[in-house]
Image (cartoon, rainbow, N blue to C red; front, top):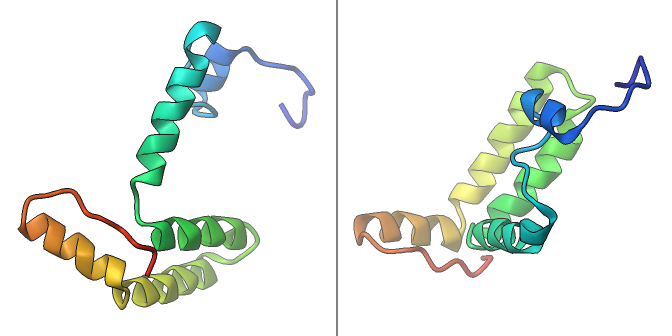
Length: 100
């Protein structure tokens, strides 16, 4: 698309992996809210650092990107939310994240 300037329809975008799903307009908000709820249930610190990493690695070498990911993983493992995630798995329950 970048080089040709040719638009593509939703089905072609899905085929190329640019979009995850296609829904009728009547279901759009319901689907958007479901996706938002799924994301909101995840650990906020992990989401924040994940987004930061995705934005940062675009112009990094593979080696630098890997080092950044490793530093973020190390930071996350020391958080209260990481301990909560482990406890939730052991206790077979949903985790309750606090962003700490």
